[in-house]
Each structure stands twice: as C-alpha cells, then as structure tokens.
Length: 137
Image (cartoon, helix red, strand yellow):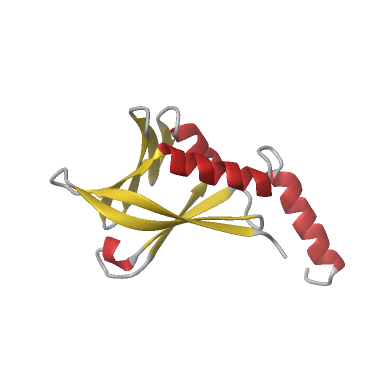
C-alpha cells in the first residue's frame, strides 16, 4: 500500500480587487504518483461551488519557491522572503493563492521523506513490479 500524506494549510486567495481572503487548503502527496502533488481547494473557493483539486509537479513547487517557475496552467513564484504565490489558470479564469513559504517547505520535506528527490522513477518502477508480482497488471 502506497503512502499518502496530507497536510492542512492556510492560504490567502487574492481577489481581483487585491484583497486577501483566508482559505483552508489540503496539500496531498502520494507515493503512487511520486512526481505530482495535489492542492485541494474547498467548494467556497470555486465559481461553481465544487471542491477543486489542482495536480502539478512536485519539482515545480520546489523551483517556484526560490524563483519564478511554471508555464501553462500553473505558475509559482516567491513573494518576498516569507511567502509564495501560486497562479492557477483555467477556462473559468485565474486564481492567485498565497502561502507562507514555511508551510510549503514543511510539506515538501515531508514528501521527500516518502519519496526522495530523484527517486520518483524508482518508486514508480517498484510499484509497477509489485503490482505485476501480485497479479494486478
């Protein structure tokens, strides 16, 4: 059984008017998908009233905490010394979400304890091998 970790976090949704709105978020990492992290946003943060999960590369989060990173739907950059901004693009619009850097760093450290940086491919190969051995594939 693959290890999954979850970490509740407080974020700040930046409104189009430039105001900040507190937002509870769940950060999730699973050894079954070692290259990705998930950010789960509550229904009150979406336009259609449904919970929203964004999935993107763990490496992107790591890079974006120290320098602007990303292309396409997710962009991440440091905001001063203590915060990190995540920008999410969808067909419905744009969302800017700000986190305390220490919260994201703690989550990344915990994820690296599950699957070390650079060990993602090995983890995938091990899971696939176990699945074949146990008759799953």
